[in-house]
Image (cartoon, rainbow, N blue to C red; front, side, top):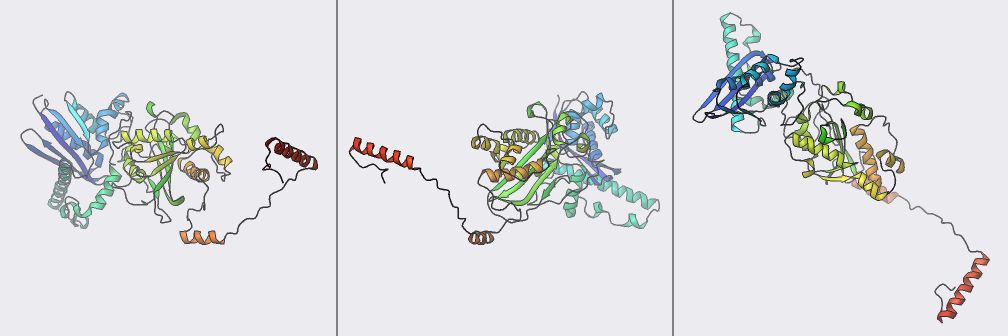
Length: 464
């Protein structure tokens, strides 16, 4: 190889589809090159792909390329998923024209593909982002000039264009972040089987619920449902958690398809919870008989890497309480590691209620259903297991196993109300039954006492 060239590539799109731009920041051993362009009607994914394609075509064929992109769609598509697409003869693949061109451009080259977190302050990625916006700006200007030359100066085109007044989106950062999250979710590297990805271009994502507690560092995916706390409590967070998966073996490619957790502080449920369905990119198989979640239901749900930021922020630092916690933590550690995060067990304390139950009730059944019956927890319909439902049941079981619950109402009593309620309680008087000895038993007792005193020469402790 004659040289090593580093490329930072990025795409931008105002609307999806809409006006878009691409940028490639090329750093050779002796100089830098800044490439950009755009299209009037395109998508964010197409601009990300075009940036990578133009960057590769710009470089000499004998150079080693080190490419950085903040689009996991591009990174995993060209390194993993493309093999499956070719086997399927590109059936149902989004943007096949660009994928074929990129694949052809990469043939015979030595290329190292890398993912980088977008908008995180990295100079190379920020430059590529600016170039992508510049490409869109120039395209918008060209369209405006063309329209003016053709005499097309209708009111709509005469309005100020966002790119001309704010070319890098600095005054509309919130809108840009929201648009980027909807169009091209930020994913972290993960070893995912080469199957077709539901691209953000074609998904209509309804917002299910607003963000709840402190906003995560990155924009929240619209398919994540976080419920805000209804009571303000101070103290260490405990999260009662459950997961549903495609199977039992995290080391054999099974994946998480649902996560549910509810928050508890000072033995009181705060009302805050998180609930997410996840596309595992593989069939759920026979596990559907357990959780009732079908492949069709999951096909439009986000990938784990898309929701990893928000889920990790919600869980980290809390005590995780789970039934058979080893199972859940093995899967969560695997998924977070694949997405480029630390293992969850490294940032959370873990309590296993199954281990607690076995120690408390040795030799007995200690499944969640068995504990519900043993502790007389109100029954719920568990025809199918669900992560959030099981977490709610487990919270009742945990409180019962560890001393009971003062109030199961999530709108818990305040400390003052609790004190007043305690003072108002009346002591319960219990009459214990007394079984008196018979005359024969009394006679035998007196005889035993007399023999004891004769033998030891001292009064017997049990004498009347």
